[in-house]
Image 1 (cartoon, rainbow, N blue to C red):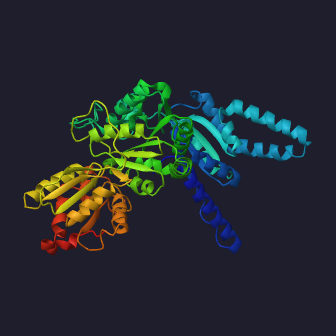
Image 2 (cartoon, rainbow, N blue to C red; image 1 turned 90 degrees about the vertical axis):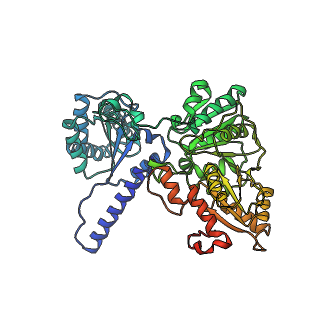
Image 3 (cartoon, rainbow, N blue to C red; image 1 turned 180 degrees about the horizontal axis):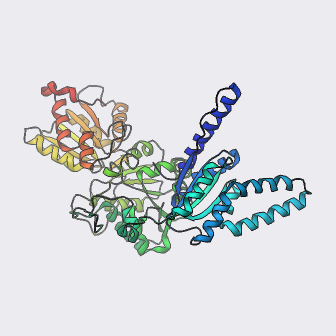
Length: 537
């Protein structure tokens, strides 16, 4: 799933194993099979606070737990070789550990001052032997390493030693190279973190030629323009500069770019601190990763009404990245917060204007969501213009329209295609772009409900988001009391969708043009025969 969680999960499993063993011993039952709980965590994930929370707890519990630190990026220790491998094997062995424990017990018989000096000397001597493990030792771990993870003659004996030890917890520091053994990946590890189809011999990835600029690039370039004109604009990301467009910003304004590592909680509160001092922080985080910092969004930003700008990349479905990276929930978890403003760009031109809107918005927190991938190919404005907060727009409104499609985000293009198909059948359709999920354009929504037989909302988000906000407004204002308008909310399904292409996933969700048009046909009074397909709001 998301990073930095493995130690917590493995510790839970280890404690459950220990509780089972204690229960068996107390009841005289046969002891359970000996089991090792092993957590593997990357060096990048060690920048997140959750890893240290888990290690702190593990050190206090003394549970038999093995943590393997896979260090494959910026080494936190010198290069390893035969000598360090020898010391690591020595330190991981039972003889060394038993002698060390015996020495501790004997040392306690000495006068306190002498014991403390001996312990300090032992710690210093050990740090000379095993390298940079002092921090882990202080947290209650027995540190072993660093060891070359590609040298099995060195690695396997150490793995056997830590497997067979009875004490815990143990941290094994293994240094590896990302992409080891495959030259294209060794030369460009970041590009092989997640891949599409590629030629094995050359390593060239088969990507379709882009027809329009990617939303991420449009955001990055728009933010650069805002920063060019305003020295108070700063950008923050949590270990995803390339995935959010902050890498572009960093080249233009390196002194105002902050990559805090995999530490979304810190990123949000750090941005809040900047905002209190008059700066204009843009926190660029994937929608799914902002979930990790929800408490900070609530208490450190929204509650204090601080003007932090949240740029939520990968909003909606993300295809091959699957359920863990799908930006399905941000509309639901942000729109419920007081003081929060939430926008969604329908196309790349709208994204330019919304970046300008975020820049100009100083009265509280504001969030902008946009999807992964290319835009729709519209012309980009030279400069963005701040949009009026809480105001949508009518895209098309033919005479005698019976159906209104109210879209939030990039489903607007599919709404237009659905309207074209229905118009060919003699059904006139109004298409509107909400632009804002919060605050809603009340006048626009109430007008659409009053002047159409059918009102359908569209969003690239879960149940409980934009459509729920619209329904709440209509109910609160009595717009549903007369029963003259039929309302449906089209959202992502209330499930975790398996990975596929985004088009296939949206088709499965009923958010493609054909599905939208069919929903309209099903709901019109003269077409009630197809009503079994309805998804009631």
